[in-house]
Image (cartoon, rainbow, N blue to C red):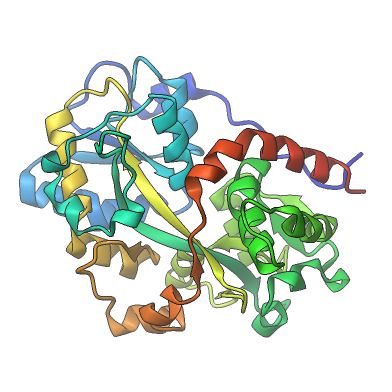
Length: 351
C-alpha cells in the first residue's frame, strides 16, 4: 500500500445546496462561491460588505471545498452568480465554454489590472477579473523547524524531514508544485523532469496529503508537520488569527505567482448586478483591504501596499515581484490531465 493518505473525493453537492439554502430559484443575494478555511471571511469583509454599503446589493460569500468543481457540477443550472477559481482552472473553463465572457467596456476598472493577469478569449472578451494573487512558497512550523532550513526548494527532499511534510492533491501538484520545483531544479513547466525527481523525494517525506485549506491549517498549527508547499495568503491569515508558530519562506530559487480569477458560470442570472461586483473587486481599495486581512496581494496597478503589509510579508512588494515566477498557465492547463495521471502514479509508487 502507498504510504501517503489519499485525499477523499468531495461529494454531496445537492446536500450542500440544501444546507445553504441555495437552489435554482434566484436568491435576492448575489451568491459568490469561494474556498473555506478563512477565505470566505476575508471576502466578506474586504469585498462583500463594502459593496453592499456602496450599491445596496446583498452579496453572500459561500465557502465550498472546490469552487471550480461546483461550477462544473452545476453546468446548465448554475446556483452561484460568480465563482473564484485559480488561473489554470479559469483557462480550462474558458476552453470548455463554461463561463460568461464580457466586453471590456462592461467592467471598466479591469483596465487597471496588468493585462498579463487578465484572461481573454480569442476575440478579446474578458473571461472574468483577477483581483489578487498569492505566491506559493514553503510554510514552516517554527516549533519543529527553522525557516532557514527551507531556504531552497530542494530542502524538502532532505531525509531529515521523513514523515514531517504534507503535500496537496495531484490536481494542484500538477499546476503548482511541479512547475515551481521544475524551475528550481533547472527546468520549467515545459521541461518538468527535474521537478519530478525532487517531487519523488518530497513524496517519500510526506506524512499525508491534505484535503482542504482547513486541513492544512490544522496540520501546521498543531505541529503535526514541520513544513509543506503552501499559499502565502493562508499563512498570512493564520498569523492574523494569532498563530505565532507558522511562517512563510520564499526559497532562493523563487516562488510561484498564482493569480486568482472571479468568473461567472455560463447561464448565471443577474448579469448586470454581477458585472458591478466584478468591477468593484477590480478596484485598488477593496484589493488593499484584502491584502491587510488575508495577504491577498493586489493586481490593480494603482494599489500601493502599506508598510504594515510589507512588514508582515517580510519583504517589500518590489522585492517580492523580483522573486516571483509566472509560468505559462495556458500550457499548464493544456497538460493538466496527463500530468495529474503522472503524479498519481508517482505518489502511488512511494513506499
